[in-house]
Length: 266
Image (cartoon, rainbow, N blue to C red; front, side, top):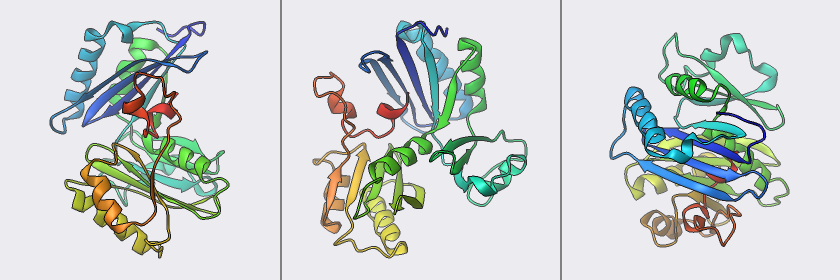
């Protein structure tokens, strides 16, 4: 349940590829619990709910009293709209051009960039209903809202803009700001390392950037030893790994040191 006097917050990350749970102490910002469940294949929303219920049953810490609970929805059913043209009554229409949607889908939105833009998306309604019944109160966002906010923050005083790549289990996100304005954001599904470099080079070409000059910042599932990093290093001259600013002494440091979403999801 929710109790504002509690000292711990819960963040739940919901994807058809897996679930993640993170608990932090409010006064120290220290991560006290982290659990990731990666599925062997993409599952349905009904199977996802079953898996979520099982996680709450199997992990007593998830049934503690929290000061807040936040659910982060991961899917490619989202799009960013300037706030000045956003019409809540026609929210579904913004998604029909780049997503498979149904007329009765529930549409949610996150205000981002100090309300300059609206991130329109379709959450997992069955998941939200379950969390609401369990906690009575919670907040939810789309994962891309967190990426966009963090990249904008990182690029705030940048003279030479960087392209940002976030690597998930089977999809990547590419984000580019120029003069503190969002120029490009897209998500791509991938199977191989060749897919990853293809989408990076395709985006660089579309943006008319120079791979010899444009810095690339990589976050998410990345290390200098993995295949994705090695192939990117072949083609992009200036690359770096995102620093999540997690405490070096945290036992979760290695897992989260390049994570742009989970460490910013409270």
